[in-house]
Length: 481
Image: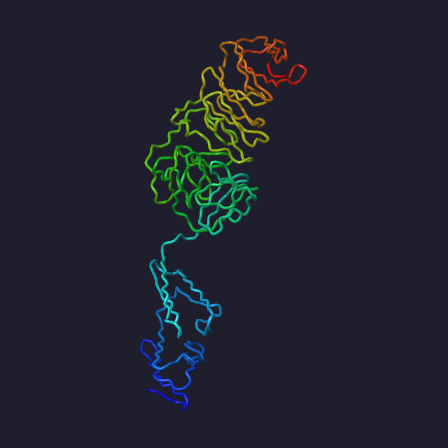
């Protein structure tokens, strides 16, 4: 019913309670002051909803409807003072924070409405839509590393991709990427490979969202790349245009090695014959192409501190790129290769060694050679004959020379000195058909004797002597000898 009270102020109103929980306050006529406090609360007064507080909110024929909305547990509206209602004077603002939590929700689309009810403006309704899709679960990967230089990559999607965060025990200022040449960096990017130095061997734990597939753009030539969160066999890399040069995916340990799989968190070199894209991923299919034919089967092999080189083979021109080596590592990393960035050589080979120190272990395995022998010669002129198989430990130098010689010379021969021009020394090789007295003398262009390098009896075979460009008194000679 209607209710009136107070001879000076009359508030004729009606309270209607609905079975569904809705409450409606109907104000018919207001006489006197319009200032009022309107709201509802429970019996104990601990839980309530305030519509207006001591304000001129009520007017004739006003209805206030209070509805318990359908629960949206995933949506939350909050304020700094934990109040969702109150009074704002002209010019004042209030800030509310809206958060959505998808935890525990099934895949699908959810929506809710935020309604701002005010007695000044028309109610403001804002729709909030939440789409729950299949995301990448968080995972932890342990990435091992060796002491010294390592090739690394980013195997997970992370918030902070700085190398200091991902690899906390790395040496400061040693992260290098490659884009035609090496460049310094602080941040790792997905799909790129990097060089990074560690003082000791160990491992790093990386936490982030998994990367299940990845497409990488390759430039023509050598590219330093990394893979996804899982192992990918080289044969399963999707290469629709066939741009990867067979046999040119390399990892790095104590030296470069041909990789069979792309490991998470590791960097790899790949040589591309042209620009294009390749894809790593569990559901990608590799382009059907003929398998890689290893032309080094049956070749002589020389292993230097664990890195393999092949010699005495002739590879067809259309296949030689498969036996090229990536760019040399940064200074301080070990590397060995034939000159020209190859891992094979037919004959008269020059071996280049990077980061020489102490001694080097040469392990060799030679197939049967008829009336010939391979000789390894150091820059300092020391020669080592290689027969069958074996291992030698010799002082390390920056260059060695591998040459093939007849086991018994068929004639006397004096070979071109090497290197020529030389600085500061050169090696002079000669072959002796018989046991004989040998004199090897250096003359200038006017026929004057400069130095006598050999004046002894020598047996049949192959000989070499080193000359440091000095005369018989040990003084440097000028050009023209």
